[in-house]
Image (cartoon, rainbow, N blue to C red; front, side):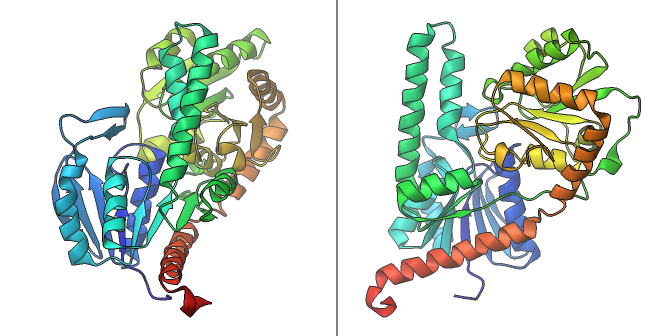
Length: 399
């Protein structure tokens, strides 16, 4: 089909403050701006139906029995009580395709109703929940011997990934944020597996927002201050830089989380902004000189692209999705160990000309990332899922 499909979207994270929610909100805004018919069903504090142009929102409240999977994401074991209400909306809206985003309460209702109503389905992968869970287990059980904790965390990571793969066999098309996941999910699910990258707003995030010129080299981090983001390694990086005589530095830490107090106690020269957004966030990025992102659990890492748009090269982990954003030696470096972070940070501290060159290349790289082109690819995925579903219903017509 070449016409615009009617889409029912079930984002598990929508109003929260994280990269997945931001991407989902941008997708809905893309549909609204282009007057595409879109039904967005999500959790929130103000239940009801709201119409915004071509987009209809059905907001459903989670129950008091909801528990937090993370600071910004909850799971409601009773969310299926909304099934009848959602079913009514689907019958009225008559979607051509249903889009799920993960193995959580909202998407589970969506996938069940897609099966019940025989609606084609597309799934997008946003969070490496298997790695996230393993990191959380390791952190919670750190008082136990590593010989016990590490095998337990590995077992949990493996089983959760297997469960996620089984769940993602339901959609006809799977969208993933990096090529590693595209290949892995395609191989394991035997489904059409495609890349869904992430864009960045280069008007909001720009080197022009910089407000400091004091000659201090600022190493920055943006994200949740949580164990799974591996933020304590920032302490070791700062310590190594100072001990090597590189003292004209400041750590600029943007975000909130239960690791903030520990970081405040152990970082020697740091500025903590807390959670900020909009122009304040853009200014913070632009005031950085080098972006440090030691997280090993991010499937993509929107913050890396935001740093690039701000003209800030990034040093990221070789585990997770951010390594696919960085061009080695041009827009940043991929670190395989803590020593690598220190080596690359020291190199950029010692080489202002190289740092300036990489700042320019980082900005140039971000300028080529358009949200509209990414969401056009999502709509191509919708059409392909519909085509594959139709073909499976009538194989002789497609022989």
